[in-house]
Image (cartoon, rainbow, N blue to C red):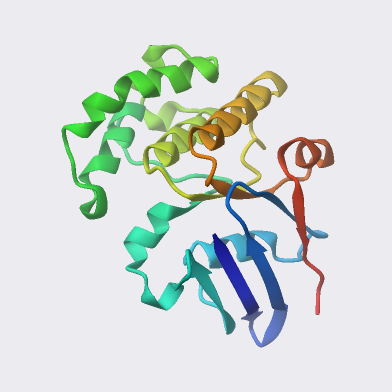
Length: 215
């Protein structure tokens, strides 16, 4: 599904990590582990084509990152930020914006997807009126939920979860994990990387591990 070869990242002349080699297969759930400062978020951002690397290559479905149209690649390999940026307006307007993107332009498709969104909201323990909430009034946890719903509408093949439940209470965390499992069950090819400071969550949600060590 995704192949990383000899990947290296420098900041101000210092290697954060280098010579990373890893293969993510369809349906796999991989933890990215390592001590604080090991560069877990930086690796996710590199895989998402958000940050440059100084050595190595990334390939998705046998196609090098350099050969992908990057906006399309980012809908297939989607990074869920710790502190997601949302557009001004309501949660629903943020979801509708997905179908105004050049790579997914289909303004009428949101209407067809709305029943599915309401199903996802129910799994997350939220009522339909959550869609009417203005984004500026959302709590950190509510912002993560809105960003996750937006990510799901992109139908990515690989998700990059960066401490995705850090701002959620224990019950909502369980609901979030249930929705991730459903997302993967809907298409067994789907795979993900996951970072978390909670070792019990990594045990529940992953079956492979990539451990970063400082050079």
